[in-house]
Length: 448
Image (cartoon, rainbow, N blue to C red; front, side, top):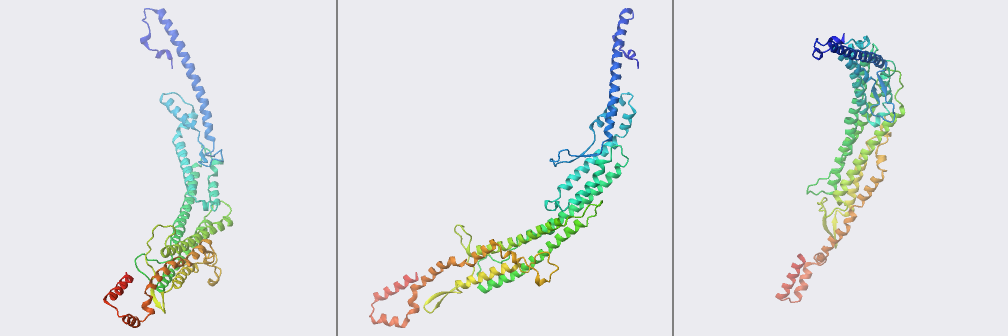
């Protein structure tokens, strides 16, 4: 390329002035030489930068976060952004018709491959973080070997493979397979935890172990106790069934984790962690049964005695009682003691509903020797407190019942005196019409 040949002719003076033309040619030559020297220096410098940028292709595919305290995005794609700059500049120079170094041509030819690898690795990191984010805290330590196995699958990208390696495609396929396997394992674990364990525990904790109709219907004591026995018997079977379901689900969860095939010789799951997860859900089952028992006893107490500190409660009648004359006294049939006894029996049935619900890890024992959750629940302080409140629930109404019975004392003459003798005494006084009116008015007053 001769810069002078490209000098704009409209800027040249006419041929009639040769001195001026020579001066212009000299000026143009100086400018062209300066431009050519600048362009040559720039190309030389750019060629050096190409070599430096190409050195970035010898870096490993992945790096870890240099700040361990920052747990977010702790894996990074180790792709030098200068390589993309190099590719863009090489494209521009090629379109201008300029010669570019062979090194730049080689990088330019692999542009699509590098971009594809970079996107694939970024997707792998996104999936890695997503899958780890799905691990629940209570099984995180249990899955430590599985996470270490995946780390081992990713390790070549940190140590051996560079952007010029020939087996990157095989590495990506292997990592995708490892991610898919761990992802499916975590999906299955979460499914068991949500649908077979947590849902059953929540359903069990909301189970009402007493049957307390809210309509205006009253029951005899025997009807009340029998109704509770039948309902509690049915609910007890439900508790027993759900307890077995949750225990089996926890066993399946542990077996699924243990049966996961590692790609390397990494140690098995630590037995201590297995025992921890087992104890955790065993305790959760106890808490669910405890909540159901406590809630049911409180429901009975509130239905019979009303809620504490609730303003102006209107409690519907629940038990059938009669006022009967026994000798010369007015009494309740059944008595308050009988009512309290019926409530105590119903509360006892509620508490004993967990006697058939066996504690875990006792499959090796005969069924009659297995410990039920009842032994734990009966000793709980909150349960003991509610039971004590129920056993004295009727005592709060004793004074009102006594006042009600005292109202019948105004009519004691009806059963203490014989009508014939009182009428004989009245006639012996030779009563007048006014005496009859006074006596009838007294009857009206007592009836009011």
